[in-house]
Length: 358
Image (tube, rainbow, N blue to C red):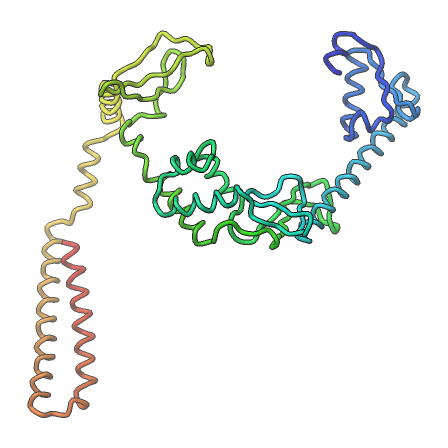
C-alpha cells in the first residue's frame, strides 16, 4: 500500500473500521500522517469516526486511535490469558506442540510421537559413544544441529515449562514477563540422567575435541587481504592450502587463489613469537618462580628433621608391639598407641608435601 501510494496510484484509503488499518494506536496516527504529508493520501473509515481530510476531526481521530489501541490490549489479554489457563490445565496452549510430543483430542492425553521415539533412541546411542553425524543421518535428521537444538531448547526431560512473555499484557493484575507455567501432563522423552550424559558429551566435543582445529591451526582466524572473506584450509593430494571459494552464488571474484598451509602458519607463528613473546621476561618469570639456594637448603633441612621425627615415632610404635608380646595388657597402651599412629600419619603427610616442593 505504501509503495502504491508513493507511485501516486490512489488519493484516498477507505477502511471498514480504523482498527482494520492497524491495531496499534501510535501506528494509526503516524502512518496516516505520513501518507497525508508525503503522498497527499487521506484515510477514512465508513463509519465516519476517522477522517484525515480536514483538521476539524483531529481530536476524534486521536480518540479513535486510542480506542483501537485499548481494544488491541484487551484482545491480547484474552488471548494470553486463555493460553495460560490451558497450560495450567495440561492442554495444548498454542499451535506448535512441544517437540517430540503429540496430543490426542479424543481422550485428552499427551503422548510421545515418532520424532520423540527417534530422539530417545538417537540420544541413547550418542551417550554410549556413537558419532552424532552418522546417527542424525540414520534417523532422518537434516543435520546434527537439529538434534543439538532439540537437546538445548525442547525440554526433553523433567517437567515441561511453558514460558509466556507479553509485557503489555496483564494476567492476574501482573505484567506477563517471562511467566513460567509448569505443565506436568507433557511427557518427558528422556530421563534427566540421560540428558546429563548427552550434554556432558556435547560440551566435551565443543571444547576439547576439535581435531580439525588441531590439524588446521589458523582455521577461522585468517582472512583474505583482497576481499576480506575467511580462509579455510583444505587437503589436496596430501598438501594443505588455505583458500576461499568463488562461485556464482557468492557473486564475488577475487584475484587471490590459495596459499600453502605450512608457509602461512610458519609466518604467523614467527610473527607472534617476535612481537608478542618477551623472552627475557619469560626467563625472569621462571627464575622468580624457582626457589633460591637458601630456600632449598631450608627445605632440605625440614625434610631431614621430619624424617628423624618419623623414625622416632616408628621406634615408639615398635616398642609397644614388643611390650604386648611380653604379656603387657594391650588395653593399657591403646590410647598412647593411637596417639603415636596419628603423629606418624601427620609426619608422613608433611614429608610428602616437602618432597613435592623440591
